Length: 409
Ligand SMILES: *[C@@H]1O[C@H](CO)[C@@H](O)[C@H](O)[C@H]1NC(C)=O
Ligand SMILES: *[C@@H]1O[C@H](CO)[C@@H](O)[C@H](O)[C@H]1NC(C)=O
Ligand SMILES: *[C@@H]1O[C@H](CO)[C@@H](O)[C@H](O)[C@H]1NC(C)=O
Ligand SMILES: *[C@@H]1O[C@H](CO)[C@@H](O)[C@H](O)[C@H]1NC(C)=O
Ligand SMILES: *[C@@H]1O[C@H](CO)[C@@H](O)[C@H](O)[C@H]1NC(C)=O
Ligand SMILES: CC(=O)N[C@H]1CO[C@H](CO)[C@@H](O)[C@@H]1O
Image 1 (cartoon, rainbow, N blue to C red):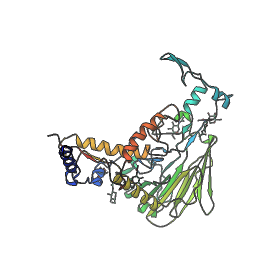
Image 2: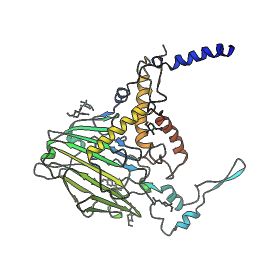
Image 3: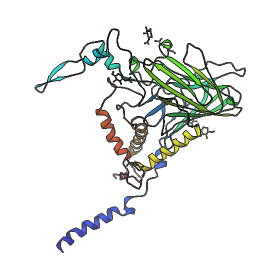
Image 4: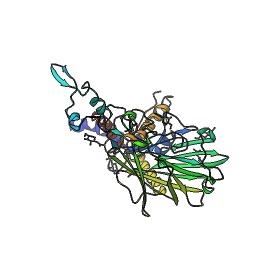
């Protein structure tokens, strides 16, 4: 009886705590998320808009592509080793030893201080490769390609819808409106675009795809990775065999494949000395959809842009709906709540694009190597902690740690 008396108030309290009405109303996640959609009117030179899936990220300029800025396309699997320093062998690399320092009474071997050129080679390798660049080409009414800059566009406005992962970019060129939609597939590493404009119908818009040389020297140069001038140090080869269209990009001993799909198009190499290819829509529609799948093997069944967009909508919605969610903003009277909520939402978007891959990279993200060695095991474990928080959900798919901050006054 005494036990019951003791436990009764506790039991009552628990019932009270778990009564749905006392847990507050369901968070309107969609409106909380989309409140913080990033918008722009010009490219940022330091911070591209990003679409991606954790294993793959694409940085976009104001056109929703990489027309004016060669932002990177990077992945969790796209790595390369530079050739060894002249006269050095794999054995030399394996035998490299850094300095030994006395640390708390014992000798600890560190990886630095072992002497160049091997030390520098180890710093530079492996390096994550910028897989390419995809942008728009503008032409005049006679079909001549124009050299233009971002200043030639007007009325630029861009919005990344965080809820769906779809980036919409509107601008006017030569008095004609253009809309570009950009998204990343979620279950493979494909980026897709839909370009809508009468310029497409008039044959005045094409797409280019280009490939940089990569080596350890540009490892830390995010958001611009790769060297676009060393065209003779690497090769690209276009294959169009009626079933598939793909470009093989070979750098030292690494080969990366870019497989293409789209509404009818023709593709040609701009020049044998360049790694730049032009893709011309062949239909007479005012809309052109195009997708590029990246991988170590050519892909026969590259998802159409429509499928990629749908995959983006489905998986992002699932992510926002089914993972843990924190709403500090709704009903809060604290003026700081809005900014805190904005940072929570944007961090979660960036974490999922940059850190939620099969092997999460260092904390600077998928497109910014940021650390000396290629692999850094401590950081994935820290990242995993955040990922566990982000992905935690109960069996019904509902958040297990939605929370609300009660206004402090
Ligand atoms: C780079 O070289 C190291 C050491 O030989 C090797 O273990 C690794 O697999 C190589 N990575 C790539 C991407 O070639
Ligand atoms: C800037 O972009 C926003 C949306 O991204 C748009 O509403 C606004 O009209 C744009 N402003 C200008 C000057 O283009
Ligand atoms: C882009 O244009 C479309 C069609 O006019 C419009 O629905 C959309 O809101 C615009 N988006 C931005 C970011 O300007
Ligand atoms: C490479 O080319 C770019 C323009 O494409 C230029 O800005 C850069 O200075 C060049 N770099 C070198 C090392 O020549
Ligand atoms: C390209 O190859 C040439 C010849 O091997 C070499 O001298 C040059 O340093 C290489 N360029 C880069 C950027 O690695
Ligand atoms: C991390 C985790 O448990 N994720 C699960 C969340 O819920 C969805 C749908 O119920 C599962 O598919 C995930 O595996």
